[in-house]
Image 1 (tube, one colour):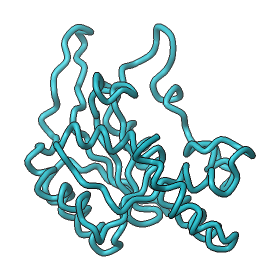
Image 2 (image 1 turned 180 degrees about the horizontal axis):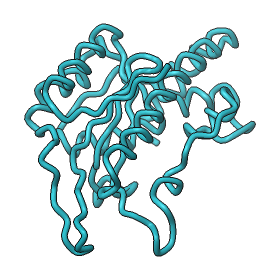
Image 3 (image 1 turned 90 degrees about the horizontal axis):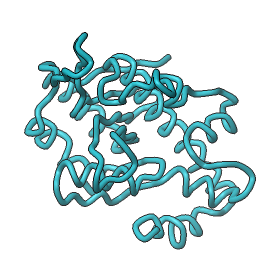
Length: 219
């Protein structure tokens, strides 16, 4: 069973905060206008603290009117102040494990939004997967879902289109982005459970924790 929520008011933000505190972990997936955190901006992020439960938080999403050249910010969106009040302390908490895929990139975008933020402790499922099988397959979320669940998650091109029909991510319908992003965060959470157990069973946990995971900050 999957429950995916849109965080566009303070009550749902409180619900998410409470869920993270109960589980002591948060799988995070960021969507942005591009991959370069210096020039691009975060559109929103999804957080999953329990398998099958995920929340999407739009932060810089736009609505596009019939006039293709007119774009406005939707009113139903939490403020940066609310985001900082409820989530920044959790990102910085030593008792909350932050989980991601290519988490360094997510960190950069969140730091750009929040300012200086300490993310430790963290796990990166792509690095965990590489530690287990460096050359057998790719280590992005969609590839790992195919390997471990034999499922095909939607790709960005599937929801964004391509060529002259390509839609900017920042003006995609909120519901479309919510479903896409929540599924990404949900499966990061699911994959983390599997990969963590595999590291233990294959006696690779020490290799990951001592050698591989510290490289995330330097790669």
